Amino acid sequence: MRSNEECTQIGDLLPEFMAGRVSPADEQRIRAHLEGCAACRARANAVSLLQHTPVPVPDPDRWECFVSGVVDAAERRRKLVDPRRIWTLVAVIVVLAVAVFLWVRFAT
Ligand SMILES: [Zn+2]
Image (cartoon, rainbow, N blue to C red; front, side, top):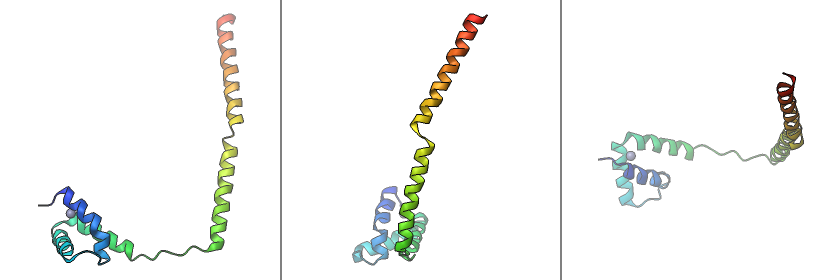
């Protein structure tokens, strides 16, 4: 019988199992579970794929560009939503609303 709890336990052990760092008893238990549980087999395949995917070493120059690019983007975004612009817009809307209210109230 496969329970969610068992699958969770097996899932937690999968990275260590794939690295060959589990006890023989756990290894046997995990292998038996994987034979009968398609979901955990798929998970084991994903873990294996992740463990065998090389992680590229970042180029130091590119890292410098990345940081300055993020700072520039944040600066541009800050200018785009400048709080003074928002308050100006709110003030214009309030003035227009008051003007329309007064016109409707006293012009008719
Ligand atoms: Zn399972």
